Length: 321
Image (cartoon, rainbow, N blue to C red; front, top):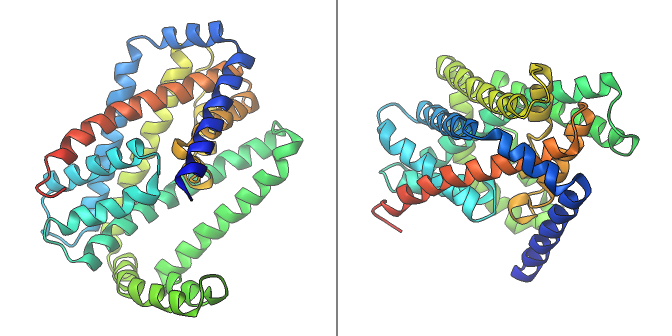
């Protein structure tokens, strides 16, 4: 995507946020943000622990003893800075983590296999949470008719992804390289074969880990699940302190519903406007005012930027640019 196109999408996203704020009422939004108050420090701390737990998951996905945990934590914080401050989401942050691990003595294959393993297992736990949220919403019949079909499609794709992961892990069979080879019609024969050849050793390492290191996989799953629970707790705190709901189910639905904003709207810089719109939609679906959704979106943006700022300091201290 060209720089002009990204800039246009960014401007449209900001315009969308302004429109949402004007529709929900700036005064009400400001009142809810003020109510968050000092609880914001707890929210920042929770997110920092969440990032730390994902660093633990990445560390446990590495071959034992190759890189100390302190260095992996630095890589994870640096990746957070890249993700938040470049408006590219995981599309640049995950490769950046792999590159930074190679600067710490790992081979390219081991580094990128570990990063993909951690991200894959995080995505699987996210998928379970998202599927649960969509099932609850569909069962309640609270979704607008305009998005009902999209929700069913998302649920189907999510369950298909979970099934594909389970098959690959249990059978020890890679799926990505065959998909790349069959994408000749889209990428062209040379590009598809080159991509498959490049990714083959990484997928082999990934499958060996998933199929042969059951104890490690279970550890990473548990760590990722706890990290997900912290995000649910974060939403619960925000909704509770603004005086609207203390329902854990509400927090679970909202967190599950926003799981794939970064992937689905990855073409929108920083997901500006798209993210806020999804939060507003989910807030209304669970019976909360639209201002509550915007408050959640704003609080999460600011706490993400603060943690990313810490990551930027860490990134600046690496030996190589």
